[in-house]
Length: 93
Image 1 (tube, rainbow, N blue to C red):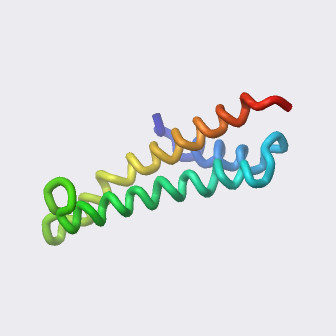
Image 2: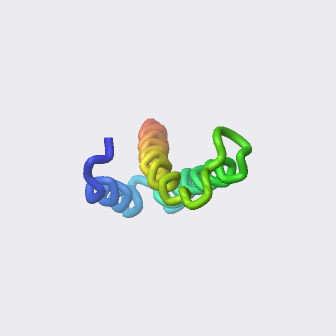
């Protein structure tokens, strides 16, 4: 789904500079939703580190946990932005 980082960043740049979106909508699509996905990833890692859900991350293995988590965070951010943009594209002009 995210084989090309350039395409992902270009899509967010296009959404941010779009004339069809209001400035608030563009910020939601490009900053708020990806930021929320990043925060969710941090909460997931915090919960794993403290053993709140799943097996606790072993001492010195945080790098492995981050490398397994960040692709899902980026995918979630991209999907959330795409769904938001599709939803906003359905509004009447």
